[in-house]
Length: 92
Figure 1 (cartoon, rainbow, N blue to C red):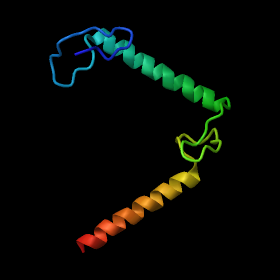
Figure 2: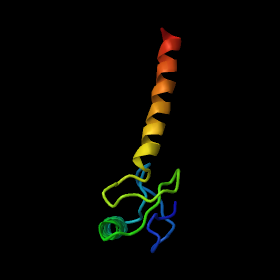
Figure 3: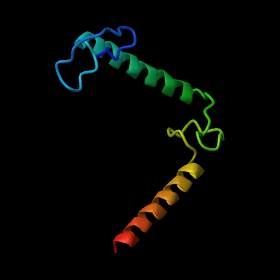
């Protein structure tokens, strides 16, 4: 198995079936790195960094924490509701 910490990437034998990191230190370093990336991303968004909707490529508001705009989310939700309604109708 290869350590999931990109800075380490050592080959190791895991003690459990879901072990990702070779040591506790690697796990701590990777977790802190991930936390700091999220922190700086949120900080950039609050300062006005331009982000685009992943579906329609329109500019997202700084207050929108999702990756899609509200109109795309609404369309996606209505499609999901229709699909679920069809499944329920088939069962009934």
